[in-house]
Length: 508
Ligand code: 87F
Image (cartoon, rainbow, N blue to C red; front, side, top):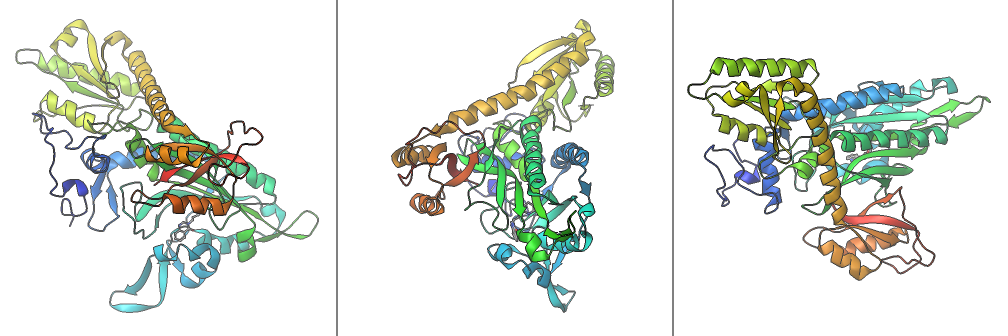
């Protein structure tokens, strides 16, 4: 039983500013005034999420799930082109297998959820629920890989994982159960593994930039921030200007031979010698959706990029007392038919128990990229009125140009969203050279590009020196795209010679 507001901060008895219009819709919080409450309200009122009575668990409603499916369709087709195959491994892990790779699991142990009972009886041995599937899958990699002809082995699975997080849960961004794809691959050579790491990272960039219209920075995690079980971690990093926080968007790891050693994943090479495989793992999660909402949403609700919106165009009949209502409804149906035939996802809202004004607010809240209104005047002029969700711009499209006009506008919305988000993100990036500049920029919620000596002790020191209410700053990534680093440039934190430019900031 989900009591409204059980763990929905937006519903707690805090004073709400009444900005509700005559329609009764609208948000109580403004994005720039109270971002946290705004986000909670938007995900619920936009019908993406329903809160659940277990803290950190959320219901993904069809409106959210359809976005996940669009990305899934794209990504699944792309990895199949790369000869990666889908599979499904069990949800449960025995404790002996989970503990097998102690070093890797050690830091994560408190987050592992266990099943200890069935009915009233205690299980003989508790069984863990997968927080990730290295230990589930690699024993079978060891069994299936014998000779060089068994390589590469490239598997992916679409599934849920559970991590019993304790820090403040946020829909999509940090939840105790989430959906993801996890890719796990094994190669004969490091070169092949290295290539795949970057090929997959490029797909993640495309998901963010081409689908979600969210700019990301590709780069490498520091030794301190990388996946401890691996050799190196690459990432696409997004940024949420309102909170001044970086977000790890997705990761692609080269695991090197650490897991191969532990799980004895060996093969006989062409020369008949025993060698160890090189492995990768990579994942993106439903967090992608949260980042998209945080970046594009506004005071009217969600703003969905057309490429991921399950409904790209909503058509609203605007009947008038004495006007030809049937004619208007027929025109709506014709518009839907033409748009659908052109592959545009469109629907009409014919409901007679809501006014057109109510429907406008409703579909704005849900972030539908384009609204078409058809009233008596439009009918008479053989045109439709089109309203963009991203900038509220209104225009008329002659019926004869409908499909071209709508297609161009959807493309333009997709591009505008990306451009606006990029501009806003770039305005938050500050380049600094000294600790004073760094501290000031951090106080202004910036994403900070700084020359760094690349020493782990110095990164730990940055964390210690920035501890506070808002959380410490850490390195986000070392961008692949490195600005010039003139001889003699010093590390912003240690004053030692700098080795690279690295992004820093608070993060999710
Ligand atoms: C929580 C509990 C137990 C993260 C955990 O990034 C284990 C883990 O291994 C854990 N949280 N991780 C790291 C996951 C690494 C890696 N797994 C495959 C990925 C991509 C997909």
